[in-house]
Amino acid sequence: MGYFVTMTTHEQPNNPLHGITLENMLKALVAHYEWTGLGARIDIRCFAQDPSISSSLKFLRKTPWARAKVEKLYVEMKSPGVKGSADTGLTTDDIMRLTRGE
Image (cartoon, rainbow, N blue to C red; front, side, top):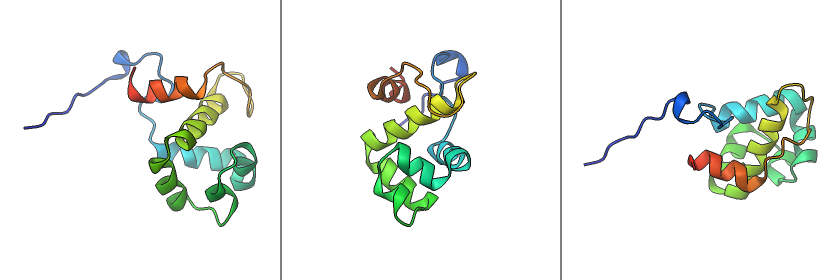
């Protein structure tokens, strides 16, 4: 018998990715940077050669290091007062821990 643990925003107050799906994150990044800008910031073939949301999601879901880079760029883009790619101080390891709920 399985069960689900439901986490609310109150349980993850310091997680800037809480409640945001990978698909919505990717769509926001593409809307902001377009595929060429995204490919220039994160060197992943699925962003540079015939890019699509679908193919990128498949790759990112199977590749933790690439997903962490996308999540870090998204956090940087959404940081208050930051336009584009300013550093938030979060490392790729920090982002991976946040997404695991640590």
